[in-house]
Image (cartoon, rainbow over all chains, first blue to last red):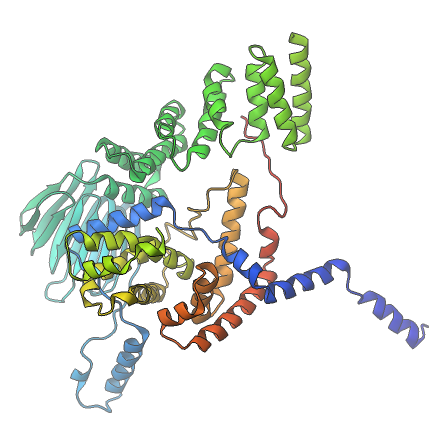
Length: 382
Length: 199
């Protein structure tokens, strides 16, 4: 039987903080009190990218051109006040229900994605049946639909004060109480009105007021609008890379000026061709993207185009990409080794110097072995 | 775009609705508005949508701004209300889950880019755990390096309030960051790639 002293000593030993635990506590203390560490961590948050800025600016300009107005959202104060007033009205303490002019908006959000026809009611008085993909947002009184592709049949109950708006790559459709179809494909956006009235504002073109039996087609659009929908398609579960490619192709067919929008459209074309495993075309698309020496994703595209070219193992194919890649900051030791292999016979001195560079980049054991083998082969060929 | 580009003269010209002035003001305000939306919106808010909505309000209501010198504070107030509205929707776009890592993809290699994106996501989560009033003070003071006087003016609160919120925010953020071991993930402290790029 152990004495109490023995037990206490054993307890003290068992609960002695190890070095790692002490370090963890010290780190926590330092983080809690050190403003510099906090600032350093916060600076890891990303800055808005050039693409994101271009996208938002293009969207804002599109909204302005479509005649839309910014609406200041209700703050929580008015919401609480309105809620309280509503509650008071409901319990019947106040006799005049007209005190509450307008209840706070009920926000809605629904993703529309279906390969086969689906019917949904995102808000009272609004019925949608659709095949394709899009997104509903806004409030029950002001639903906003982004419709990317496919057919959307809209039935809005008349005289309910529902201010519904549908945005497609080719324009904006506004309605108050009506039944109509919106069909979006690569050729444009077709709107057919069954009942009521619809205002169609084409992205580039006139605004038309359609009545029952009328139809219109918005064909022309802007690269920025197509880019926005291509990005949405990329994130969609049902749209797939073929749809992204189609939208990017449409945007590029409009021959946008050199700009971040053009770069991003080219990037989307390239990445969707890779996703579709259409590798020869992907290489050409990659070359198009790389034609801009300042393209922001240059390093990433070079790495992939190099891999595509390298599939054949033919140095003549991959050499241009490797040579460009070693000039970037995304180069890895493997790239130096592969370039050394390709230049081994024609320029052994340069090959050896590339291998030396690779060695300074802490290669993996397998790569170190490869470097040694190549060095032997180059020496033997001399 | 630097802060100086939002000069008072441009704001005044936009208020007077001189040709092209409102458009230039939008361009000049966009980087700041989008950065605020990205930093303060949290993972459930689409920062680009929020920035769009905020700039549309600027476009529509700039003529109602009485004091051009307070444009920054006015813009921040709009972004703040738009973000609050977007947060209320409590809506995560199913087709765009999580935070897009765009903007952090400038690391030297894919692995480092992924680590950087992971770290940025962690920092955003730690920020999200702060009360909104502490979060905005921390971002404005620590990240944007604004003085506490400037932030007090932007938020319309006393200087002492900014100072106390900042102190509490630092301590709380630091604790959360330490618990999440974010400081261990800062690039350069460990992790060497390289994984084979060759086919």
